[in-house]
Length: 459
Image 1: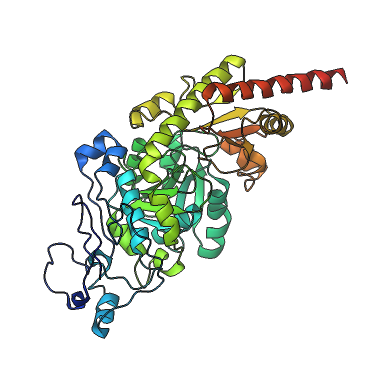
Image 2 (image 1 turned 90 degrees about the horizontal axis):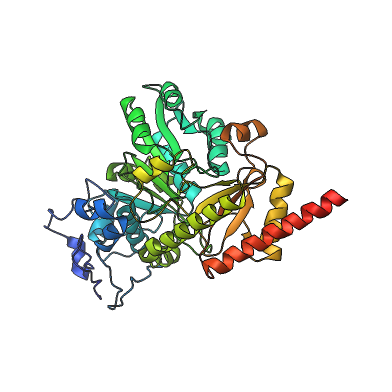
């Protein structure tokens, strides 16, 4: 059997031989009974400097025949050489840390490799990759909360997450949520009930209003009352590192910036090894029993994109800042955390990893849905500035009117509480073409808007 080679930056990557079913010794490497999930220790010096440095210090796993890229392990099930080995795997004596695999709903070598990358990116002990971002969020909430549990959450969340907390979890699991203004720390503190509240949940940058959460302060408030802090960092990979700032768990929709291609659906849970192992428990683990399994081919695709995530994020953020600055000069009502008049500009500057900017999204408030739709029409169909589509993190600019699309799960009162105006256009800034070329396309669309307005007034 060929061996899987690895650079010695982390835990051993040697492929077990046929005789390894009768594994003896080497207990100091890893004791499977204690933890089924391989963990990643991130060197503090590398992590403190830059998440890219942490990724670069991660062990490089070569392909089965020495290829520079990891092999895709497309098998659903795995063989053993001796029947006794199967029993030892199911008792947890032998596990993926020693290269023993049972079934890809449990663990898959290619998916585990992506999990190590995600853990390195977020600076957590471990990570597990899922079939979608919502699968990651749902699994975490179901693991941390029991029937009768309580969550405190930001009032401004992605519509799917808001619906999960507002409708699904109360109906199915008797888990209730109190929504608060995440910038009102006194309200957050009062909403968290010691001994009852299990989780404080918020987004590092809110969808779609781009409110920046004070992660260190919110984490302290929650921990003082015994609640876990779960942060959705989908909007700001590389830019913010919630776990370093005090959060317990970081979730992602990898489909967005991390993928960058708008061609896969994927998610991740990053956090303590103890939590991830509990989520993979054979009897009570949300990940194990609900089965939100990532396909190994998807994991391979994503593992090849993470190494250049830092470069992509820098360009997303550079262009977003430049466009927001120019839009403001044109008199456009623009929301962007990189602008000094943004309420949390200085907070983000304090928390952010240096050199990555202020995020790749901005919002333009057109006040009414009709004006928002006209702007998007001209930006796509008259000037080719971007595409009318949901999602974000693509290399082309994507735009949508949030109130009637990705936040449509919220009713009118909930949208008002979240600060989502009817004409709020969320733009995920891409990096194709030159900056000046794309800016001229934006200006052309604005000119067409002005012509339309003139004609409308005459009529």
